[in-house]
Image (cartoon, rainbow, N blue to C red; front, side, top):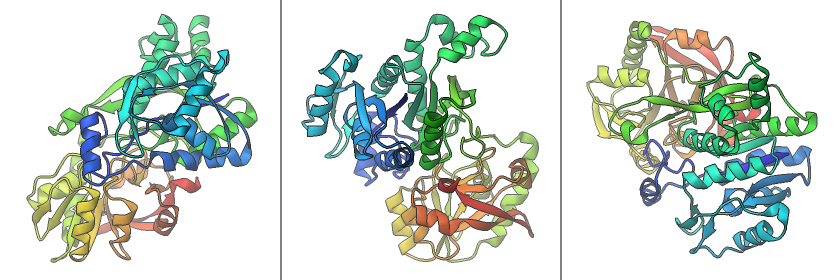
Length: 438
């Protein structure tokens, strides 16, 4: 069976320029800055693909915005196995889900916690809710669990499956025991662990446990139902300490492993850091980008090591994993939100400066959601200046660069070929594709 667990507030911090969405205070600040989570839209996009191929499919899920609402909207059948109690929420769908959850022995909730209304449309749930929901879905018999969110949400999924597995299985998931054919016991552990696939809807999605887009996740899930099983790999779940990140410390931490269905071109690769040996190439690429900049143009410097080098050569201090607006060599807005970027682009000509996420090939949609579809549309006919050392392009081995703004029409418009600045006077033309069409 297919399972679904949704983090209702995933990704809300991205458009707000907050480098993540962890914690109720961060979520409230994001809402105060005019940001909103697009998690339900991205869940719907995945389930639409699944429903088109398997109408009326029963899906194990959690109550209300944690899954059942989206399952029901896709004309699929939710079987609710977890509900987070809400004293503040009286939505009819949540009441119905709670009734389903207690209506029979096969729909008993594993656990419930108190949640409060975050705003008019979104309930506040915490990491424990995600972990418990994943645990409940796994115990109910899901063979593939779709988890909607970012790296932090998949980290919670690891915790939920840790409670579901035996001590030896937890050692396998945490990387303390091998998941290979070395022993029959280990192989049995690997086989019993449900497969998990992330539907990308967060801010940071560096772990190789996500599909490249919601549509790709839906297609993989549909293949799983049709074929009974797909090839899987044990893959790392990485996350960055967001509080440390806001103090300019970027230290990804390994939190465990998940068994992930792998489809070439549809399952995301791990983010690869730029090697220290590439420092000269990064510097040359940044010099090339600076040489192309024109007076009077606002440049929206996106996150990444190469764009950080662009900022250094311009003589400004960049924001880690943020977007800074630079005009004629001076920062006008540091760590800008989507709304601030729209205000800046309305004030005069502007262009976004982005780099390639190593190993994955993403230009938009991974860690730079401030550069939203609305912002990119406001930039005119040539919205992107792409800058990257040549080796990053070579390492893609012919795979296209990817864009995932959440706006299918815009992603299609950005597809084709883009010029990548690799040095002063040197550049390459390279293919770009919408991640939704893979």
